[in-house]
Length: 118
Image (cartoon, rainbow, N blue to C red; front, side, top):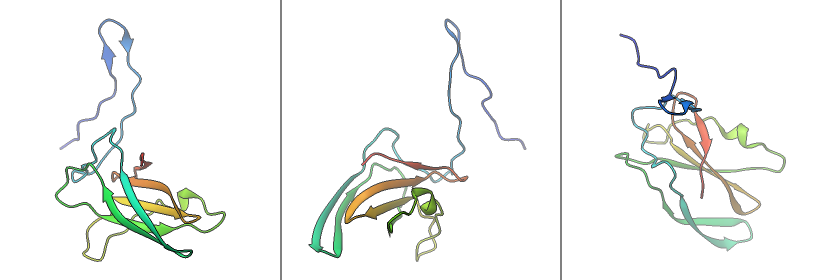
């Protein structure tokens, strides 16, 4: 059985449409175009508590990881998404740098990692 793949998008009036096709897992549920809201509290000079995350995701469960970036580290070094302690595939990774939320990554599966608005 072959997977259906879109090779071209054509507007009848204006011709070819530029698009970007990407493979995603069946379990992905991020609502595209939405913004992640993250509420934090500085506990001390060395502790940043994440108090609440609001993520528009239609999945049955949403798995989130937090990583603390060192000086000079690149975001691409955090594109590996393992599983959480319950064996679920991680979907979101919050990157903290200089005691602030630096980036939020989303794992759409099939090696497709993207930065999302927060």
